[in-house]
Length: 366
Image 1 (cartoon, rainbow, N blue to C red):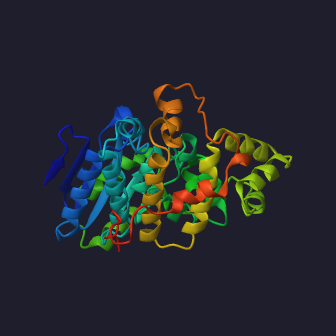
Image 2: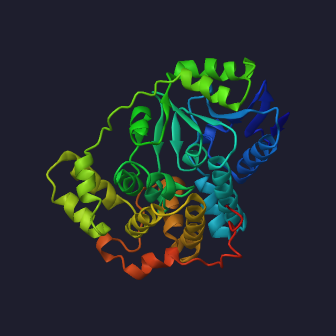
């Protein structure tokens, strides 16, 4: 079986006992389009009920060939164009992406993600639900959405809030990039593999006559370094500062702390969308007490609000994408402009669902 999009942006086929998915949009660092989301979903649904398929493996391609780049996220240029045009495909994108994230988290067969190179945003969404998350020395993991006036979606509230201590708040607010070993320490990866050994492991999955699903995952784990490593961050400081009640107190504490880490973190937060920093802190704290489906429904509400509370160019997200990826002036005009000027009612609006439980686009998630 081979399933591809018209432009072969997703390659999906079965070899031996394993279904293989390759994201094949290297010039865009495999940024997800709606068509790609549909192609991945179609393959996973077909293989879920196929007794001949015992496991699934997913990777990305780089300009040099397989591996090297996993997925840089969603196609933010499409977000920008669709939001300004009032294109309903934008709503479809997030509904279907979040449903795919849920499918991966709840998949009944091993789902093995080769998280080589950039793994950000939507790339985290299609890898964090994996039963085996493999990183390399080239891996760069992050949820950098506050940089574009968005929030860590695709289940980000769920998986970041389950990082050790309050590390999730730090990663969500700053968008800090983790290498492969750091991702393991953060609970966002399961095993380490030298990048040069990925092709051999991938090929062996196609050639080995596995007896059952457990044997596939066991085979992969045998090739990985799973030894725990300490995180390269000041955990005591993170716990002290990110336990404070709100973003103004967090930024004040950072700016009053005499350390390179605190100064760097404060400078990063001062560049991010003040409104979305407040929204994200609330998101992570709410998500810590939620199951996956409820978190995804909350995030679906939030992303609708990102584009519709203030439509068009007034949207914080549209402005953030404009500054980073469209005009590339890196001078976003955030509204409000300062962390200290955000009002509680502005934050609360993001968590007010525009749908009833029965009409919610993700009502079917278990």
